[in-house]
Image (cartoon, rainbow, N blue to C red; front, side, top):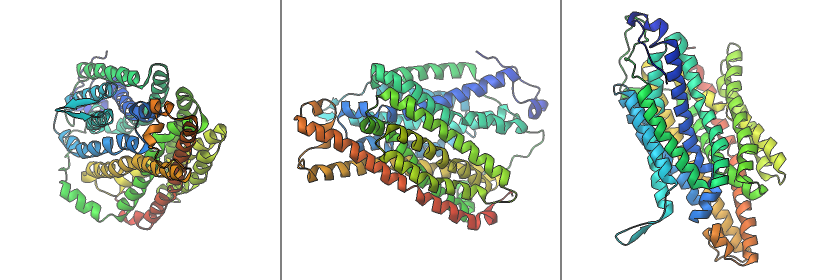
Length: 477
């Protein structure tokens, strides 16, 4: 493991904190933690079919597990944890949070019905509680990590370090598919949760033992006067005058609403509609589409940077074009009975829609002064996670439930509960009912995903409206 040596304090703004080798170690340690963060977050969506079959829950109930169950507490706890990281020991904050979300992940693999005082709490409710704890833990990852890096790296190297750290989002999603899918396919979803959760607890211990809390402001230039942090009320008042911020935030929330919902149920769609195994769904479909999404984010930011002098509003209209253009690709991808057509279209859709991520942070940071940037970002993430991540998966799940029940009523299966089409309960049904279950399960989710894909046109409208006030609202041009 790495060791550290403090740099001369008056040279901190040039060299950063510690030796070059130790700074690199800390940066990679933080990246690894961020990868683990998104690996644990995305694992449930990957093992969706196994979980729904064993716990006998519907698409709507599963949407609650992956949506509001995680997002509500992640969003609510995120802002106070971010503000505490301004003065608390950031390494300890991260250590405790890594341990908490990892323990909750491991416990997720052990859930079972529990009886308290004669009242039986179902496995679904126990898993929901575990997801809440995962959300609380993961809320304490990014804010302190960004603050730590700002003190380890001098200003001229800071953006590169933060950009490297941000790769954890896509790398974590890829890792969840590369690791979670094959492990769950071979040993079951419970083993995947337990193994990854226990590994995270080990990471928490190693992180605390090897990463040193840097002095605050160590890498700032000598004599720099740090602006007094704006109060929450002051930040809200400044944001209240920035119409561009709220239009962009609405667009980003609607886009994440569609995106988180689709990502949560994509594996289930592939397994139900195209009959692929869990390993095939993750490695052949989810990994390429996640990679395409990563390229799309980078390309949108790069193109906007190249054309900004001639087209200053490019950061708003580029994502709008991508969000509109992705609709036909997703509609065809989720409608096609050919899995290779689905693969190509889903990858193209993912590659051209995710440019809005580059836009949301650029506009969110650009329309406010330095004193309120952190709070503006926290408010933006609060809205996006609570309404986007929180509502997207349940929307797709409950629409799927409604469509299933409608089809059941139309074909003479009105008394058939959808949970009866899951796992062992399915095998107890007559063959004709089993055949209906399999076809209706696939069709209901497929149609729900197509409906959600069409909704991608809505956030594009808000990004286009943002153009009218963007130049007036920008603080630095």
